[in-house]
Image (cartoon, rainbow, N blue to C red):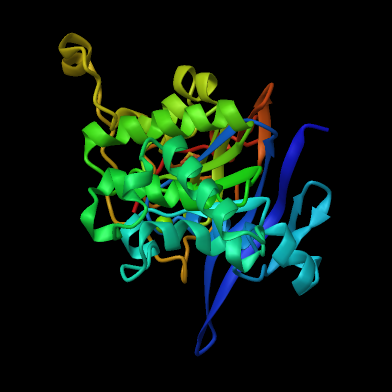
Length: 332
Ligand code: SF4
Ligand code: MG
């Protein structure tokens, strides 16, 4: 089986007190194949980071399963979970916030090796730090400097070197390029791709827009308000997007060709993202959906496979509905 990670009906709810529950992740199912990049996309607050953290076991789950390499992550003992973290690492959005400013680059990168007692010999450990710096496009002269002496792109390279320190198989990259200048974004994406090929890494790549994800991902899952609304291969998502939310996200990506750009229809979503504490009934997207129908406020759309490897949760693709149910309504 090449499905290295399986997330089944995962729910992560936070108790907010006074009987209120924040449904950050509300029943999400997907798998990631060994060696691929799976893109997880959606606006901030849709639950994508929470999924990343729950997969890693940094959050307990509320319901559902996370199976990695045959192991139920949340059922692991503390000791086994510690060993497991060598295989799965995380890269964060803001490399500066995730690096200790008082530690030198050398200390930042060697810390995970020390925590896991990887090297008995200091010289061996230092050689490994130098090697990692070179693998991410930096060099050994950087080892004794501090994170603040580096640019955003270089800091993200340091964050990547640290994530690679334990030789992981799987990396969760939570918006690794969102804080970087556009010109630097492509460099970091290219570095990640190179490292993936060299080391056979598997990536879960989290992002809030589809522009870069398109280039890096093999398959993509689109999330909205704690729910997965569409999931398919990169090509199918761009060639044949089905969910109205995916269509809106795609229409927001600028196209370099001015002729196409001008004639193209932008789908502007009206209204605010509802609160995950009090999500809309039925389809969570209905308050902003230009296609909303009567049935959308009554029934939660099923997660169905409408063509091979293409799943969507939307009543537009449900052929069992009555004429009355499919009457169009104004979104509100
Ligand atoms: Fe829009 Fe209804 Fe589909 Fe939801 S189920 S995306 S409201 S058409
Ligand atoms: Mg986030």
